[in-house]
Amino acid sequence: VDHRLELFDIAAGMDAIGSHVQKWALDVASSAGPVEKTMAPGQCWQLEEAYSLMHAALPKLTVCVSEVFRGVKKHSNMVSVGVDRDSLRTVLLHLEQIVLRLGRVMIRLIF
Image (cartoon, rainbow, N blue to C red; front, side):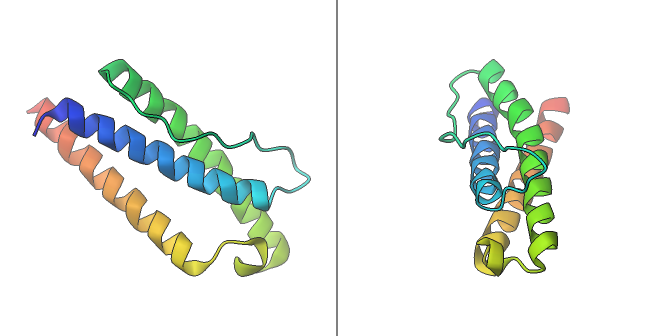
């Protein structure tokens, strides 16, 4: 498998997860501050694009997860803020798969 193609796929997957969680954050946005409007997940065709996409996706994911948890804490459950358990489980499993794939690719690139 071409490592570049796998990195492109991983970057697109990370961005897709970030966009999905960003939609939740928009639904539960608190008075603590506005969340940027969600954009369609990106695609990349060069390594620099893949690195940039991953570099941008991680902070977006962190901020949006924080916003979702703030909303959940305020309302005391996820369903009342529009986040159902199946969607959360799916996103977490996808994120776990992305992180494991990224680790395998990085090990192959190093050795």
